[in-house]
Image (cartoon, rainbow, N blue to C red):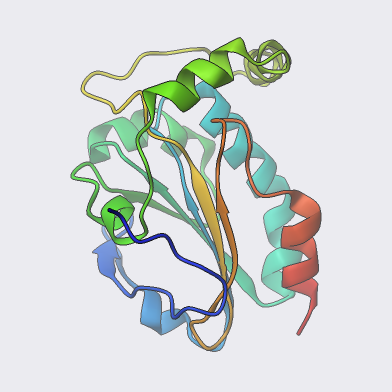
Amino acid sequence: MVRLLQPGMIAPTFSTTDINGNSLALESYRSRKVLLSFFRFSACALCNLRVHRLIGRYPQWQRQGMDVIAVFESPLSNMKTYVGAQNAPFLLVADPMAALYELYGIETSEEKVQATLADAHTKDYIAEAVAAGFELTPEKDSNFHRIPADFLIDENGIVQGVHYNQLITDHLDFVAIDRFASNG
């Protein structure tokens, strides 16, 4: 069984590169807060809508000492074509082999995807995504059943907030993220 993270645990460390080829080590973020967000795949309209919303809040969070790292289970070429086109001011990471997903216990669930599709609010999210310019686009070889998750990691590398989504659209609330970013 996959070990789910809980608040108070030390965040699993990792080293990787972002979509621009820059080295990234989670340990290098000690002394800063981090929102570590795991998404489905880079063409996911709902994920791109969430990234769009993160971009809008990021300048304030950065001034408050918090960085954002967004991970997608997609190849680098797809990352640059889809989510990379938003020119996010924070780090985007391609994890096509799902190594970081496994490290953080991020699930794949056909049942939760079906529950999302059946949820009354999903049509609203899809309409909002389309209105923002994010079309429902299939991504070849993507993990359609990946379920997102968010982690708030403090300056000492301790997980302070954990949100494993119940639906694709069920991300950690911005109120909780804002509170975490402003407490220092």
